Length: 149
Image 1 (cartoon, rainbow, N blue to C red):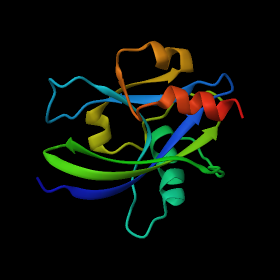
Image 2: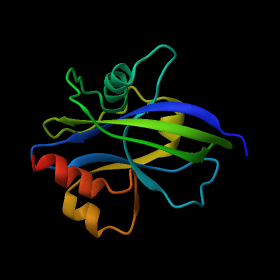
Image 3: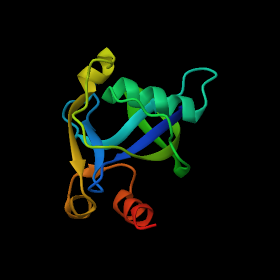
Image 4: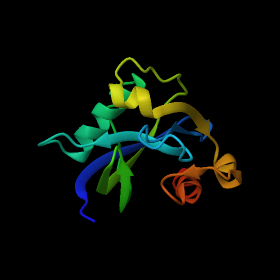
C-alpha cells in the first residue's frame, strides 16, 4: 500500500508540575475506532523547518506563544491512516516548559475541530497507569528521563 510522506513537528508542553498536555482525537472517517492521545503539533508547511512548524502549531492549537523550543528530544517514523489516506510520517519532538493553561481552540482548522475531542494534562504516573492509547509510545519514560535532568 502506498503511503504519503508527511514531515511533522510535535511539542511536548510540560507544566511546572511535570504534567504534559495531550489532545484526545479520532479519525472522523472511522468514528468506531478507539480515540488516541497525542502531543500538540502537525505537518510542516512547504519550506518550513521543524522548529518553525512547532512554534506555529503551538500557537494555532493552544493559543499560546512559544519562542524557545529547546533541543529535539525524540524523532520517530511510522505509518498511520487518517481520512482514508495512509501516511508515512516522520515526527520531530520538542519539549517546552510552560505554565499551565487552558488551550484555546480559536486557531483550529475544521479538521481539528472534527477530530479532537478533548485534552488533558497528564502526569507521568497517569501515563504509566492508563490503558488508553498514548503517542508517542514510551512517553512516560521519555518525560521521566528529561524532567530528572
